[in-house]
Image (cartoon, rainbow, N blue to C red):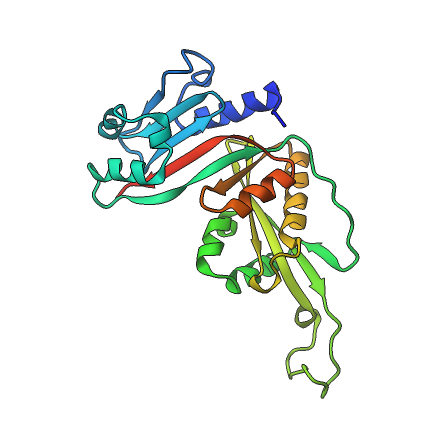
Length: 256
């Protein structure tokens, strides 16, 4: 599914502002010519492919060196990291990801077995129960908005198997299955992230709470964005199933 011109313009405008470009820089000029955004105080070097344009953002010496490489080469994490390390020995790769966007909220079928919670403790509890790398990839720690998918379990009576002192109360009967969050970029883009409990993956819980996050983004007038790591095909498939369309890619290397 292709994105409408209106959505494309919003996405391009947001990226222009994030990359310190003029608002129309991704609309003007020859699409075959890479846009260069020099930022001597940049904390990272970023190469972005967006629709029919490409942009490299970073210090002048890195951008100058990048002219020797094709767009396809710069999109590869290993190539960009090697290029940057020639000038910044402590540089480290942040990753390469597909950029996908959505224009219509997915259909959400009500489920009687779960509830959507906006309580922060449900999200923080899930993060505490998940591998650190997964938490970092989800972006939930930085999310300004988050929601969790919670399953309520019947509580056990005192003395029954599975009951322990201090386990009574609503919290002891709840299981957080997944959570989704978002960061707002330039007041236009909702960068989404999803985290599923390690013991409850493969059951559609992440997709369900992601659908809620997409719907809420539209309610707030934002264009949902999904970044799927190049080495994680499952994330890309999940985005496509949610109705996202691919628009490009982002490769980033952090400077020392």
